[in-house]
Length: 199
Ligand SMILES: [Fe+2]
Image (cartoon, rainbow, N blue to C red; front, side):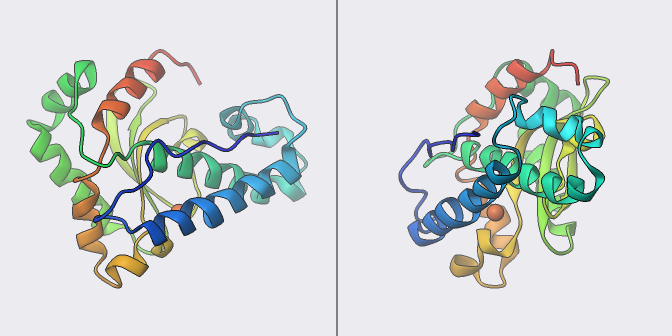
């Protein structure tokens, strides 16, 4: 069985209301986890391995399984890469971001610009590519970067359920405010942990 993650905080107010957080974690995320466990709870593979080996599953269940496991992986990264107060970038990821984007501010601007481009439901990710470079990427629905040989280390959920109660149709403000609560410390550590991983 795949176990739920615990939220590393109790509140993200005022940027995300407790009502949104509780619904998002307690209903949306846990529903994906429940459905994943119904389909694949008896496996010993990691969730990432399910995505990487999706072709080994019966073709009739592949799309559904990929959707559920993507929903779990994407939400777990999203919830874990936030904190009640923004934390700073550090280490090698900070160096890489400054080298590629010029400054942390420019990186944030590029990420926000990409998020604003996403049409419909999906996520904006920061990923580690096969060649070790980092990149910002939009994917739809519960599609995950693992399907494209990339490792996600940062995720912004852009489904309406992530912000609609708090921001209504002002998705741009939600995208802006995400950077008041982004846990760059967690993301920097995740980069260090994942950079050597071969998919
Ligand atoms: Fe979500």
